[in-house]
Image (cartoon, rainbow, N blue to C red; front, side):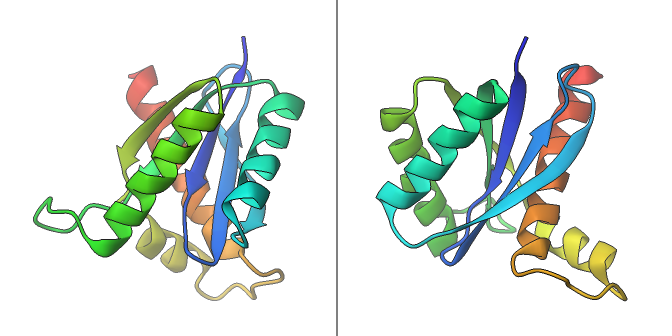
Length: 135
C-alpha cells in the first residue's frame, strides 16, 4: 500500500513528515540538514526505501497574490531534482501559512531540537493533503 512523505523545504533545514499506511494521519519525522543536493537526495532516498513511500508531497510557498517568490523558485528547483532522481510520484501543494500555523502550535512549547518547527510544518502540509484526498 505504501505511505506518503511530506517535505517542507528550507535553505537550511528540510522538515519531513510521514503518513500512516491508511493515509489518514500525518506524523512528524526528521529534519534534514540542507548541506548539499547529494546529501539531501541520499537522506530522502533512504526514507523512501525504509518507510515504503509511494508518493512525495512538497509544500510550495506561493506568494499571497499567487505569484512566484524567490522561495517558490527555490522549491520548484528542488522538486525538479526530486523528480529526476527519485522514481516515485512527486507532487506539490500550496503551503502558504503552514509555517505560521506551526509557529502558533509550538508557541509556549520549548523547542527541544533544531528543526522541530520545520517538522511540524511538514506534518501540517501532509495532514492538509491527507484531509483533501480523504474527503
